[in-house]
Length: 275
Image (cartoon, rainbow, N blue to C red; front, side):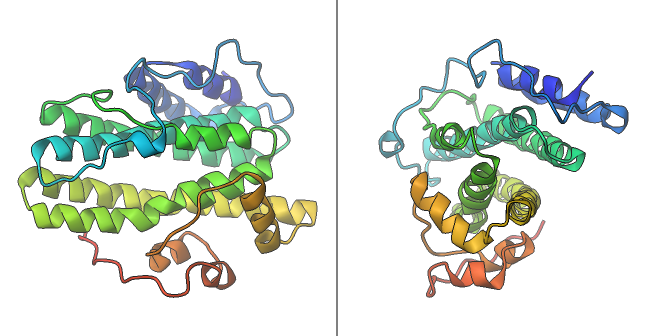
């Protein structure tokens, strides 16, 4: 079985559980898996495969979810679960879509997809334990929208998906953990621990984006910081807002120059709950 074809087949799957399970099988076979780096497979279905629910609405129409009520807690978990489902699709799309990259590129994104599937499963099971299912709340499609915008440019994809949209999760997770610690219920504390696992892994995922963005810039003779600004404006990426998790961003491979280009006076982040 060829990896990029497997990734496209998984991306086409509409059932989230089936999609996550397919990645466990793919990961088990990676030591000897073939990778055709020259030719991309041809999609036979609309992308991405996704269930009929959740209902997708504009970001401004997604209700604010406070974890201080049971319904709000479920809605908050659902929003993060939806992000992780989209992150599976983003990683799979990078594998099948972009030809001419080194084998390590495809293997890195398979590793990311597998961890995103684990995150999705973790959150889905927690939601089900409190009486809800993935799809019970409306959600937005911002991550996949950027995927569509950058589908013809692997440099833009690496710059604006893992290094911009997914890196926002590094900043948001401690803030959400802080709110959940104030809630203090067993379900809230379980969510804090799950977010700690996700944050730990997401540092690595953003690092993969940084690694390949810089590799591509070096290949193409581009200045990473200057070209990022061009891509950011061209594709109308969301404006980055403080507070920033500088410690996590540093571990994810952002340079001092890139960090200095962020808001110079961020608010302090709450202390993380240890794993």
